[in-house]
Image 1 (tube, protein in one colour):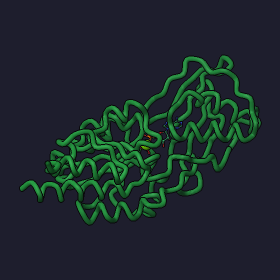
Image 2: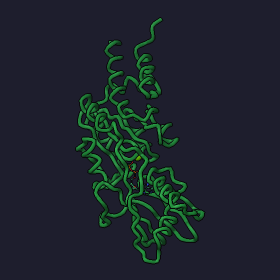
Image 3: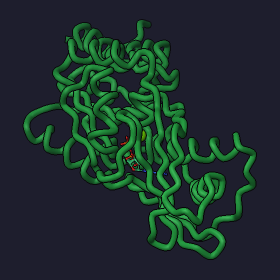
Length: 279
Ligand code: ADP
Ligand code: MG
């Protein structure tokens, strides 16, 4: 017996490195008219590096600042947190224990370190760093004590995948929790002009809903725990498997397991071909 076209398409998607969870999802992917991409870990490699450590409180040394930040970030799943911890490890710093850790999706983390309340997250606009770097502010007991500038390189195939996606659908959108300044260079590099920055997780969901209300069938591609609401709401939610959180993998309709964004246009085409066979 021959395999039904949608099932064959799912098998083919698997060969392209995409796990498509059902035949319905496989069918939906082909009807996508708009693709929305998350930034960190999706269009970027997700292995960011701390490029600058700026001490803001003279009571701190550079190492003390990095130690405090890494201690608070150690329990976070966020790629930016991993960058901070790696930076401290490279300097062979011993990290004090952190208590009362809490992740604030799309914002940052809080923890208690050595009796102090530490908050780490997006720096307000008045903290300027080199263009294209993400400014992360470290506060201790409410006072800004340091600024970290973090860089993340685009995935090598991102520009090509965005161009192929545009050819198959329409102008792709970048939905990011990062600031407009932090996102603009990456957006230009990958060829996305529709950039919606500074979005908390619920706002990413709002953007997806608004595009769907305007008649689009939206595929959202993301990796972070903060992307779960948008993944769940999108017509097709696609998770980048490499660094994605468990919640993201569960919520997604399809998972890119081979860490290659070209899988997005590939599965859209596979789905369309299968539909042509069916009808
Ligand atoms: P994106 O949408 O690009 O994947 P997120 O929504 O995950 O970004 O994060 C948005 C912003 O929140 C980041 O650019 C950063 O400023 C801040 N942020 C989130 N999590 C952390 C963290 N663990 N440490 C530092 N900053 C964080
Ligand atoms: Mg992300």
